[in-house]
Length: 343
Ligand SMILES: Cc1cc2nc3c(=O)[nH]c(=O)nc-3n(C[C@H](O)[C@H](O)[C@H](O)COP(=O)(O)O)c2cc1C
Image (tube, rainbow, N blue to C red):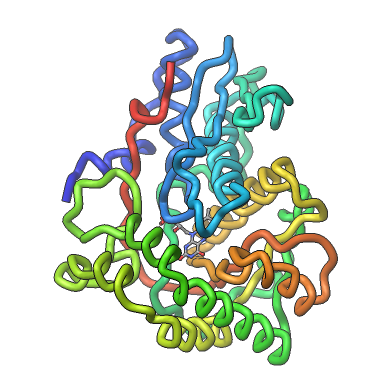
């Protein structure tokens, strides 16, 4: 295993470079927090560029999953998560975060231009979310049966609303079962298709890989030997029934099952969904809670509208996740700041 790929997670131990250093130095420091965001298959579909005194956050379309994310929707959500971290770091270090989403219609890859505003003291909430940045992980392993507090889930619903999205807490056995069935249907649709398996296999690595992106086998609870075989097994075998049965059970028994959505379905709303998602994930991490995803039916165009139908919401579902109390999991690799900043 290459320790360099995990160094980005140590960023929170390093001190702020100070206010006297130039903008580029400050940008390098702040981007160190943005890159800890989650992204589909850990493809990290972003790059950053200085735009006068702003940090330009760009989508890297060469890193979008062609099969699972044909409209670049999930990659844009991942970039929204990175933008949330960036703004949070600016605020934590004592400034307002200023700027706009999609600032230039002629440059659709430029998703945000974020600047360092006036001095402003960070409040307790900001600092606690900031401290959760390096603790957050996707946890696909078993959760305890106890559910998150109802008041905490209500707070998450409010957070989503304030961030321009909605969060639906799936309640009742019937609705849970209907959503779990859709998740299993998404699994079957994807695993039957060799293009899905090839794409996934390309991002799943052995536990000892030197890669700075993708998902090591341990992220799925696999040991070193199994992780060596994972890419071959995924590419070669149609595991649809096994995966669908596992996910149906996991979704039905999730301590909390949540759907994040938006009223519109545009790049701007995907960015709103991404900011809301990261806000929720950091609140969860700060409260000792873990999350993982069941986005399969949202990655299949024919199934996606059925998700809002079963939960009785209007608008567009963006992310399906479970939340609960899980054990420790290891971080996944990241590309370094130098690899994601372009001149
Ligand atoms: C928009 C989005 C969609 C995702 N969809 C899935 C998914 O369907 N299944 C899954 O297991 N993980 C999913 N993930 C989690 C990523 O695989 C994970 O963030 C990445 O591997 C990095 O690991 P980390 O979150 O532990 O840092 C998704 C993440 C994002 C941001």
